[in-house]
Image (cartoon, rainbow, N blue to C red; front, top):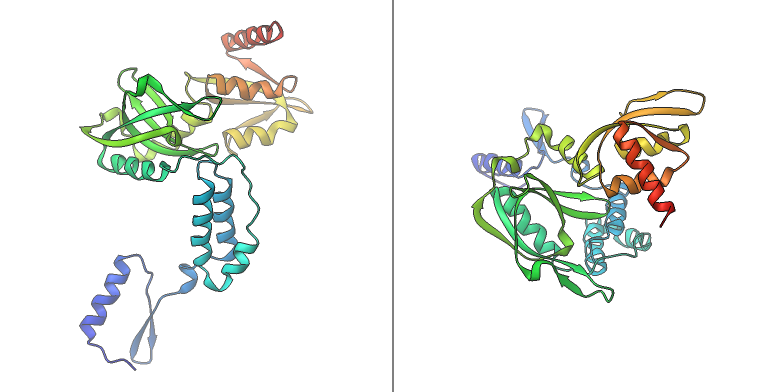
Amino acid sequence: GINCDRKTLTKDIQTLRNYGYEIEVKQIGHEKGYFVPEKKRDFSLAEQKIIIDALQAANFITREKTDELITKVAELNAEQKEHILSTSVVCFNKRKHSNEEIYMNVGVLEEALAQRSKASFVYFDRNENGERIYRKDRQRYVVEPMALIFNEDNYYLMCFSSKYDSITNYRVDRMDEVKIERESVSDKAIIPDDDFAEYTKQVFKMYNGPSTDITIEFNDSLIGVIQDKFGEDTKIVRTSKDRCVASIKVQVSPVFWGWIFQFVGEMSIVSPEQLKEDYKRRIFDAVNM
């Protein structure tokens, strides 16, 4: 019942499509009817619940920001807002960080990645009283950003270090005074899209160490543990009634040793020989501490 010029309507529809609306066409008699299928744009209750649970579980998001974001997500479904909020009061993570600058940090780092520019920041640890202790006497770190990675409940900036010709990871919640530098990153800091998933998986599954192909033997009760850590497509071969072997690629580092030491008596290193000897030495050192 609303009069409108045909050309104006066509332009408006195209504008909506340019902004991501899936406008569909249906023939009604001799005319065309246009509509937006709401089911393709609205979140279901289950989808909203998953997002809210993820917000609560992420420890890099402060408690105040978590509450703010949960309210925004609930408002996407106004009719069910009160129900969503009343059933989402459980806090899964009591170890929420207090660095409110993380949201600004992420924004600046995303812009640096988009521009393929270097970034700089000061980096801190915390002492026994929770106070910030800045590294390098508060000198700025200048890095070549490669990607922002969410891993093990924390946000990391993965960078290429031209000084050491290697990859370094920094916690975003431990950064302060983040800035974009005018200088562009080197070619080694640019990950091809096809290689991105595999690249980051290797760096973050067992990170900050030399990449090594190893074979491990383990009780079949740990099959799920192996698949959770290295992917469901990991090739596992059964060697006996209750034992299996798998060949995997890891970054040999304290993180790797901490992981494998959880399964003493249930998992062993088959190869390479040097890694087996290193494992024995670490066990000996632990016994003699």
